[in-house]
Amino acid sequence: MSIITKNLCKRYGEQIAVNNLNISIKEGEIVGFLGPNGAGKSTTMKMLTGYIPPSKGEGNVCGLDIVDDSLAIRKRLGYLPEHNPLYLDMYVREFLEFAGKMGGVNKPQKRVAEVIDLTGLDQEKHKKIGQLSKGYRQRVGLAQAIIHDPDVLILDEPTGGLDPNQVIEIRELIKKLGKTTLLSTHIMQEVEAVCTRVMIIDKGNLVADSPIEDLANITGEKHHVNVTFGSAISVKELNQLNEVIQVMDKGNHRYKIEVSSAEGRKSISHFALKNNLEVMELSSENVSLEQVFQNLTKHVDRL
Amino acid sequence: MWTVYKKEIRSFLSSLIAYIVMGVFLLATGLFMWVLEGSTIFDLGLASMLVMFQLAPYILIFLVPAITMRSFSDEKKYGTLELLVTKPVSELNIILGKYLASLSLVIIAIIPTLIYYYSIYQLGAPVGNIDTGAMWGSYFGLVLLAACYTSVGLFCSSLTENQIVALISSMALCFLFYQVLGLFGEIQWLNAVGKSLGWFGLDYHYYSVSRGVIDTRDVLYFLGFSAFFVVSTKLVFQSRKW
Image (cartoon, rainbow over all chains, first blue to last red):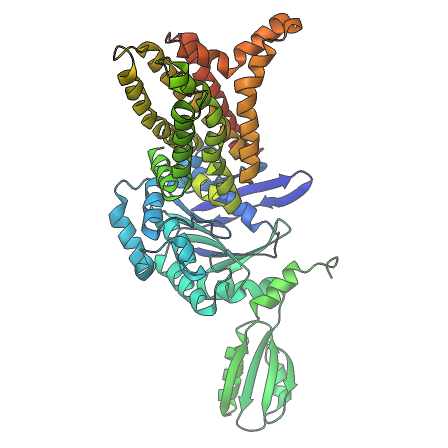
């Protein structure tokens, strides 16, 4: 396990920012950390990086305690803070060499060249950071996070404020790095595109933690299958299938079928084969992550 | 520590502030020693650098805070402090790196004044008739004084995100420690209390060292003073954890 927390809490005075958070992240996993603004994502990340200590509970990164072994953890952890703070008056190479030395890389020149290559900063390496566009600055932020070849990456909104092309580039980069990664974001597609697992946090509480495919089950979202047959069928027979809950006729032999699990698709195609029916279209309607997110984090008291 | 030190020195040299500080320091001391009537060497008729060493502490009250005001305020304002602190380097190393960088800059500004010493050495009748011991003592004192100012400046800078607040508050604190405490010592009815307050003033020790007699008590005082503010800065750093 690369990251483990046990009843991690953080209070600011009366306000509870993070409440009894229990998470564990295995080596090599890319985990998406979702939640509305102010849910405690950044606070959790700051605790894991040793920037602020927890009020209660404990955390482990690479088997080291986040309070007692903070210095040792920081050697093995790359961190991209929220808003990606950088020294704007430094040159890209100069800054990366500085970050490398701070990260404990003795002769950083070679590593800097590698990282510049990896993050696609080759064109910009002689510029001042202040002259770079936001997308390139974000790459510099990522570059400084990986410069000391850490085992674990913690990225706080790595694609915040970027245009769609830049977002995709950064995502590809994160995937290419293949490190144990915890990344926070507001963008649902991002989680679907990059992450193997998703954690949703709301008001400091973990409300969901599961592989992306299973997320729908947790909230009791319904599975739907869209099917178009070549000719008329008997709705009654369809209704008798085990997994089928409800069949809606949409005309032109198109049906929207509510099923109890993702397995429903299988039995529908069996049904078609058995009755010698032509299947023109068979697709399962995916539950959107947005829907799940809203269901988990909407509050009655919030208008 | 040296990584931070080098970065700070580079950023000083690539910004105007370093050159302004050096320029202003040399201009001010030069004017008072050689040009402005009433205070020049020729008016005094003495082969001594007293004018500069009396003036320098006041000039430094303005210049040292100007050097240190950015060091932590900017990092706090732009969030880079979080970047710095989450690197595998201890907080004390970061603070000492910045402290030594600022102090180096002040020392670099002071070094060219050795030309004044050479000039006076040559102007003396006979040549070389100058109290060299007192001169080196004064330089030593000035560097120690600058070390104290720098630590105060750094401390004030760590308290706020606003450079101007850091500048004004460290100027006020430096002035308090250099001048005001000493003045308390002269108030008759304060007696022993006033005396001990006076002892805590920087000027008391500065003048003691500048006589050319280097007393370990004075040196310890200066070093303790600097250490106190460096440690205070570290405490301010850690206050985010409270």
